[in-house]
Image (tube, rainbow, N blue to C red; front, top):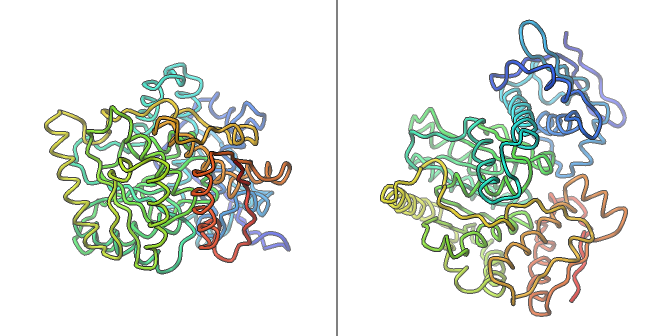
Length: 465
């Protein structure tokens, strides 16, 4: 029975109903069901509730995960194992996820993907004892198995998956440009992978979707990779037809670079910079310097200054070798697509010659400092070593952690609460690096890249030498 609940003074209209998962998971063991119902710190109910609410609330213009949880404080989800299979009981779910009392099919698929990945990670990754999560190989194997369980790895296809990074808080011009690039990629039968949210994560998918329709390409892939800490702020957009929830930001980033056949970076803020630093830090590791991975930074003409500042920061912090791992193409979507196509051809030839898999980049070395989860506490942020005297990939790892902390303070529930309780994070660096970091972050604030337009931004960080 479906009940539509009228809006209140503090909450929009909601729906209470029972739905069946859409194909991802049909049955669970009694133990798995109990863990999903368990509201204690050892249970999975809170994790399931937060991720499910994010998916059901997709399309709402907010990037404040705490605000979403407070708006729907009376939302709940319960897993029920019945004779006919698994059912999900939803209480006070956002009404926008339903049409005429029935859940939108794409949202139901995303909800099922959330359930699938939470159960698999809990059983096989965290408690199964199969993977050594303190070793490089163990973590990479865990990433592989999560992706394989989600059906993400397509062994029979030649390389054509383009990972697109960029901000959720971008201008209309930048969004339209990312859509134009996606269109040019789609015309060339290339598929899209993003962080699955709005802005530069949605634009390329939307453009490619139109192009695939023109080419009568009915099996186009629009892969979204998220993680529990960010999903409420960057809920899956409706074009995503494959969704996977990785356990943390580090495994999410490794998943991106393992499945990518090319990477495009659109304008963004601290989250996009975190991704750039992760990518360059990994590629600058001596074991990876010979691996071809086409990387392109691109945006409309008005974004040229943004990429100039990012490029300046990279050259100062990581050196000219880092800048040599990417190209900057401004205001030319077709040139971007042609460069990607040529780069993918070179990557395909390299993997053929080296008998390497097309669907997962096993040859890529991801150092442990890029894999171990970083908890951005005030103490951890203050203790980060930010110095150009460090080996370049180690500095990149620490800078990535610093930007990850700022992301947490901007949009993640735990980070927002920590800032409210203890004030801004403090970052310390050598004078020259601090100057360049300050210039970059101030530009992000001035260009409204920290939060969605219209939101008042109060910095969650302080810089000191």
